[in-house]
Amino acid sequence: MAQTIRLFLLFLVIFTQVQADPHPVVHRKSRARAFIESQCQTTLYPSECVRCMSYYVSNFTTTLSHRQLAQLALKVSLARAESTQAYVMEVAKELNQTKAKGYLAVRECLDQINDGVEQLTNCIRETQQIKENGTSSQFPWHASNVQTWMSAALTDTRLCIDGFSVRAIGSKKKAIIKAKVINLEQVTSNALALFNRFAARSRFSRVNKTKV
Image (cartoon, rainbow, N blue to C red):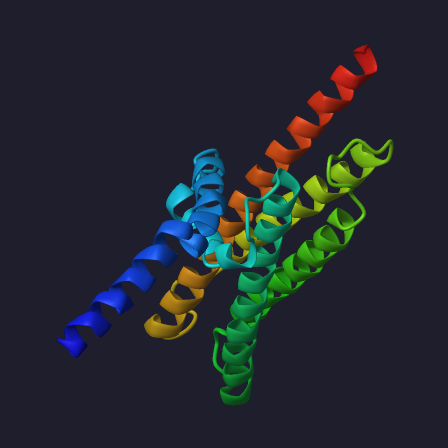
């Protein structure tokens, strides 16, 4: 009897807590995730966009702003670029030591990725100068810089793939490099799309305020 009463009281306590706040964490996270999913539909690779961005959703207790989402996408792109850079650098070093024919091709690819890392780093620094609502008089200049650098970074990834010799290195390493660079191209393309969306909204807001 005593055990039954204890179980009943325990159930009552748990039920009361759930009623007070049924899904305290899931609810907060779901708002940010819903926003990410809706915005990712405007990109060329929505599934990859949602997969990458949702990993960071727990960092936000409510939802994200368009500026925060654009900055987050840039950070994801830079992280992928640095990861790709590290792998290609390792392969280039190995090929150089063995005097393999594929070294020059991989070295050229690495140069493109290095340039892309620099461009994306510049983008993140530039977005830190942009105010939350993007209504600063300096916004068009900052936005133009970011869009130019991101487009250059995207071009870098494509040049890496285009200049990659099919028979330059072993098939396994070649496949890994290609997969990494293609994924880098996708996340960079998504980041550019999300930033362009933020920039367009900010410009629209500036125009409306000017008319008022």
